Length: 96
Image (cartoon, one colour):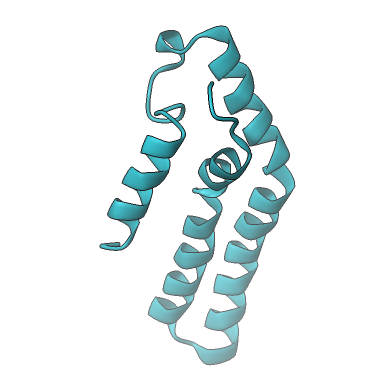
């Protein structure tokens, strides 16, 4: 979690706060860019979320360790959350 804060701050600065601001404060171009980024990572994000649930269930059923299963599921689910940020950071033009 400590590594996430600086990474999130750098990504947010690079994408000019397109995700942390309210939709009402964004202009039309920024809303389109944000929506396109969400659309581009929909399948990978859905796959990671599904893998989180199935991975957690598999770990618990195979090992019997509930905490390990929850940790595995949480980490995979948490990996899906910054995908739109990363996509937008990689594909964003110089000026939004």
